[in-house]
Length: 177
Image (tube, rainbow, N blue to C red):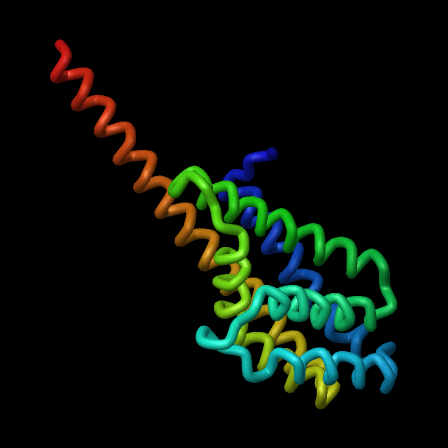
């Protein structure tokens, strides 16, 4: 498993931020009414999902929502670059959570990711429905910046955990001496 530094995470977010304008423009220019209908149908399946009624399949449905949106730009490089950056960010967060907590419940991790993205999914869906480039761009930018914020928070938690482990080891060494 590749370990990412915070600088590499910044690079991933920079790619997503840079792609936001192009993605928004291409969606407005190239998406079809049938693709917009498909996006709407998918979104309706998860619109009212919350903490109390979340099911594992809702996370998969949210991924389908973003996949259809990105594919609607009809640009494979945009799709690939965005998905690659997203996946690498997910691996980074999973790695840190694993280092902090040990075993990871991936289902719970997916639930957390889904619930954290609820507000932005709604903003993006509304923007896509209106086919407004500026609104789509802003929703994508906001999602990337939120992802960066959460990655930083997880990284800080990881550093705190590492410091606690180091301090405990130092105290044990001092006690043995």
